[in-house]
Length: 252
Image (tube, rainbow, N blue to C red; front, side):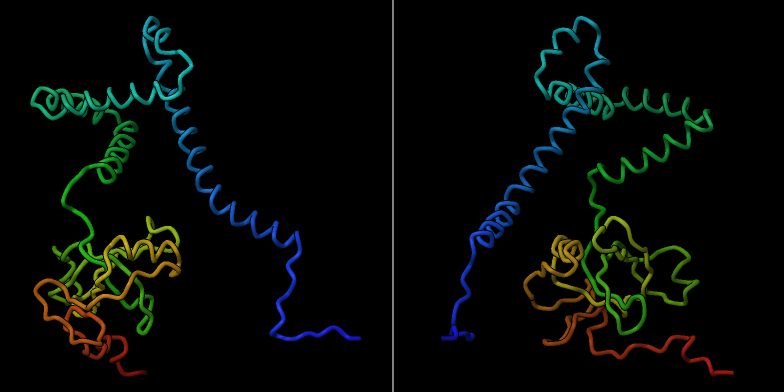
């Protein structure tokens, strides 16, 4: 007698299938925890190995008790003390004196200035940050990419481009948003997104898998709010794409 088969009959799960499913579920839970612990342990061990040998001999014998993280604590306290003195007038004078010596060393000067610029960009707390997430047509008309508005374009760029009102946007790459392209785009060609910068970054890193909830459309500050149901644009939406100079030129 033939066995009955059909879409309504449930397929029997084997022991190996249940084991595989349970293993993958556990891996999703264990892997982030394990990698986080391993990464923290690696960083702590590295800092300890670099800081503790720099201490004077009596202090090193007292500190080197086999407890991980002592070097990290010493590094944090030392850095905080240096930062405290760097904020007052006496500390700033010492820093200027040291930097004047560094400026006289050709190779050291280049390395120091590059490292200082990167450090200040990453760690300095200031009001300078991305204003909004937006859409720009890139790499060609009809294809949209997520970008971040950094500031209004100033200097000679608007005049050279023949566009008096432009914004500077950073267009990141997927899945690494730390690299990308700096674009100078006419304000009328920028479509504002109501998702936050953090939500847009998650969308980019996840390659579109983590999408934020839909919100009501808005526009750039000082611009009219787009009509409901239309994409948010810097010029109120609904404007047809302008013809570029290259497209307007007659052929041959």
